[in-house]
Image 1: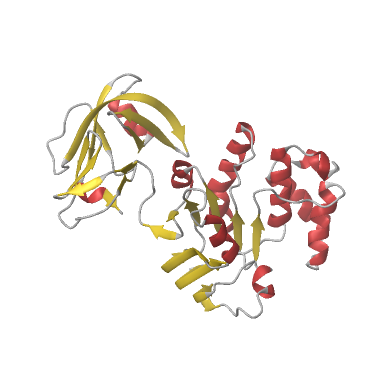
Image 2: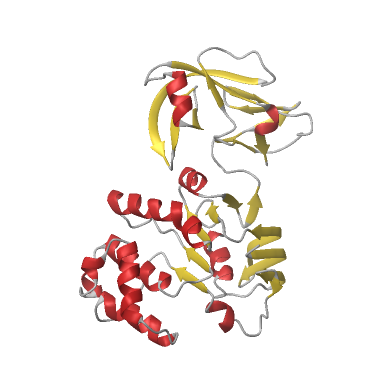
Length: 325
């Protein structure tokens, strides 16, 4: 594991911002942090980057307890990209070269050329950093981190200020980074479906606490006699669920069918397809049943179902696939 948090709490002044009983982030995997603004995503990234220290609890890095009195050695092992990255005066090459010189690296020119090629921004090498577009700035700042080959790469809302083309390019990079390097990647995003589609592990946060749900297909309501009531919709729950104000269904736990299924799935709701789109190597299907269900299926499933916009379709899922909190 790359990180382990045990009974960790972090406060801003007297306000509790993060409370994690036991959370691990796997080494060599991609982890997405999802949640609403103020849920604790940036705070957790700052802890992972050793820019902040927990006020209570234990933090392990690479399975070793972190010495909170001296965080500098840990900071050198991770790369942190802020939402709005800062570049120094000079060219892109100058910025990356400075990072290498500070860390005492040799063969700097070759390393810089390689990382610029990796991110497809060789043409930016001699451009002044202050003249870069938003997408170019993001990539240049990312190149400055990658050239140092960090053990962990941390990205805070990396898609926030990118145009569609730059966002697609970054998605492609994220999808292959851990496979090609063997290193750990953690990124935060407000787009829950995007995080779910791109990551090996999803860590969902709500009001500073972990929620065991991707927070997709999220509905508000009440529980009565093992049934979740949300407006005109009823969701049958497992018998162990007796209370909660929110229900969420993993988009990959939903099965689509042309006809109502005769199976162990206790929730079968008919709706109409209102969107079909590609999403992180899968197919996203939005079904309007009175509320919108987001469903992730494979390309093969899309062909087998032979579905089109406007078609009637059944949304099917098991009662134990519903997370209530």
